[in-house]
Length: 198
Image 1 (cartoon, rainbow, N blue to C red):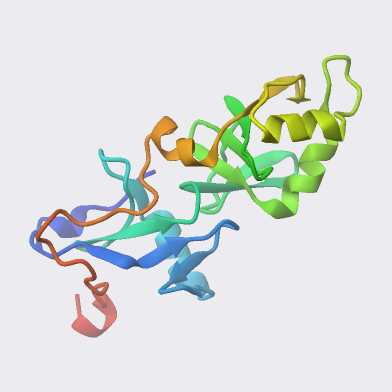
Image 2 (tube, one colour):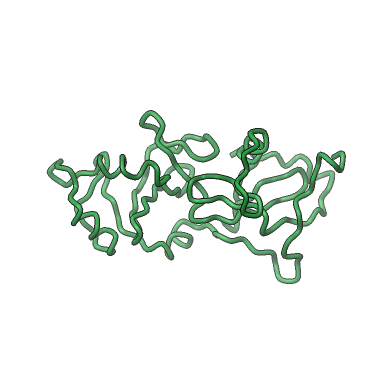
């Protein structure tokens, strides 16, 4: 992702923002819990979404880094014409590995990173799962995966692997809820560049 850092040189000491912006399980951006619907703002967030070296996801808002609280993973994928597309519109590419957690959520590790499959695509995804003989995967095999037992369930020839939701952030190297360093301000409101004239 090509995040624009040009404003940092002009305003190097703007404090980071925590606790305002989040990404929900359907790939919607939320500002203090309210879903963002303004198309221009969504497009801006999508363009400026990135990750730091500590696995914290953020949106670069001019000189300010607005950290994102993740409902689950940093990416949420939908299937559009057989292609995995993230909440930012970026293509995920072919999954490198597939996982199912104890709640039946499907996670896909792609070139972008780990992402949750939007629950609206879950039924279609599971309908295309099959066993080692190519027959539709049975409910027993899917429930076994949810209970942490490796089974013989495949999607497009790739095996689905069990994973515990609590293990996902560490395994895929991201932080769900970034926090400021000790002593830093905990909730700094985002800089409003429109009103400040920046």
